[in-house]
Image 1 (cartoon, rainbow, N blue to C red):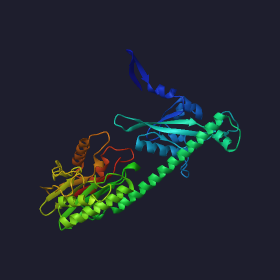
Image 2 (spheres, rainbow, N blue to C red):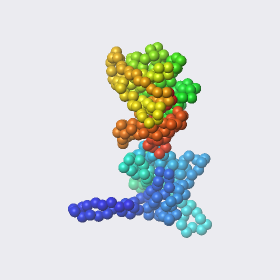
Image 3 (spheres, rainbow, N blue to C red):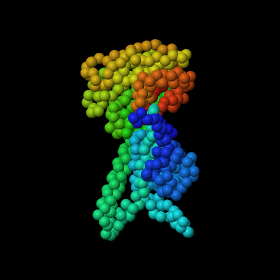
Image 4 (cartoon, rainbow, N blue to C red):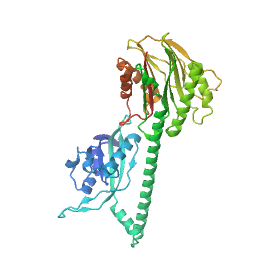
Length: 421
């Protein structure tokens, strides 16, 4: 692990493995799967282990797990690593106790020890987490000073200040943990609400598959929706939409807009007129004006698709021969609220061959932080061509699987509808 550099014309190589091992504080280098890649000398000294014992082993050989205790060091470390994988930001673990054996004592005895840890990501060129550094600090002396202060023992000015700072730090960590748990609980409620409001009528048709997949990050859940309406015999309306914002607020706005668009489609039967009516309604809802949506109407008798878009990514139509994909990007109007409500919206009608496949989706399927959205659209087209021979259910699963995302899931909501025509 080396790199070249220069200083006033002199070249040198940096051995990053040696740099890591020379770090003063105890540190572990881990894979995202929590396998030890390296341990510096300070860490080995602190726990009385040899490098050969640790490298290639699970980190839980060092930090014990307890299925019954979520506050066990191993459980805390796993949760911290999961947060790092999602946020790609350092994460500070709450103070924890892990006793260590006292060298040379017979019979074996353990000494009470307290630790503070920071978990930080090492990112690759693609922005994904390659490795994780876990830095550990022994704060046993600080904890003992705090206990002594609490018991009224006499401490030096420095010891008293240090103990007070430790108490403040622990209180701040507890508050941060409480906020994190409250946010996770709100996100779980929001996802449950979102799923409850999305229709499942499409599941009654074997030629239709619908999916809603929440984001990995609790910061990015909810706001995407799909809808599927039987307007009459052989006359189907399919829509997807995306509310800007996340959490319970976005889920509530989503529910209102989805219902309003459904009502407008039943009343008008025309995608453009329905989206115009929705734009009128969105003006009355705080947080709804940047919403995007696409509404389609499929006429199975004339083999035509009529569609209108309000700032939304274009639907894709895979031809019956499963070779060519048509991007439905002709009717392209701004998001709700970007046009005056009275301005007419556009719609386009095209023909399809029986056996074709229509795919509607939200931008979570194609948008990535480190990529142009056109790159994601091209990737989706390639995946649709590759898996186009599959039935709707399997095709929907394949399209969701073949996308680069966080290790544990997507980094934004995804709503997806696949219709075999």
